[in-house]
Image (cartoon, rainbow, N blue to C red):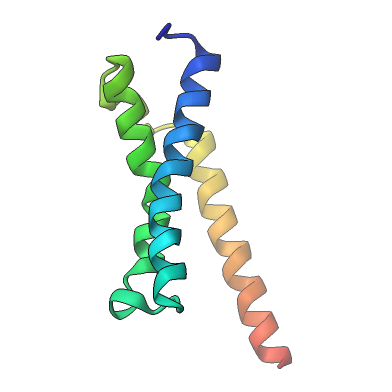
Length: 97
């Protein structure tokens, strides 16, 4: 497989679909989301992360290339403001209800 951005994205999407489909098949087979004492929801959330690591391994890339560099001030400011505004939105929605 050629290591181009387009092929890497396709491989990532395919692996995400495969990992997610396995978990969804177990959920559908059991008949409810609380299968495994409610651990299926966190497991399904980790499927994209596992797909990213598997894509790096398949393409021979270093998994450290996926790292986010938190020292960038733009990202830190955006992250802090998003957390603040989402918390304010949640608090206001709860106060209205």
